[in-house]
Image (cartoon, rainbow, N blue to C red; front, side):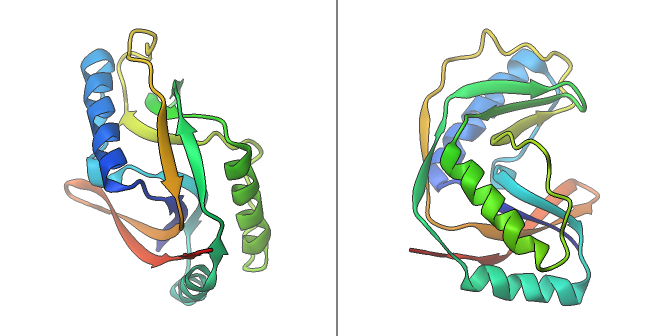
Length: 169
């Protein structure tokens, strides 16, 4: 199964991110991500065997992360594959992401990315990657736990299922 570790936004923030996705789609075109799929990926694990996934469910369920807050204050794009996103720099998230990869190494995951860009994908396959006219943003994203999420594709697109959540400290 295809897995990743993520932060899931509180519902009020999820709604605001959905509103930003609407604005971005009107400006840039492309495929808007559904509100229920909006998240911040901390570690993409790819295809994972069922037995290893069960170990990860236990690991995440027993994990405690410190409460924190991420400032979402910037628009950005990735040319390939036409991604429009919102995000922001965060030393605390960078430390969390690095510590997750340190822990994942004990499960055999050694594909730590070289550069971490904290972001939430709002659009895929955008026709225009021009965000300069979109509104200024400055939103607080409080987080208390992370999630182990399974991604699967059906006829109507990608869907996510949360398999485990960490505890807060």
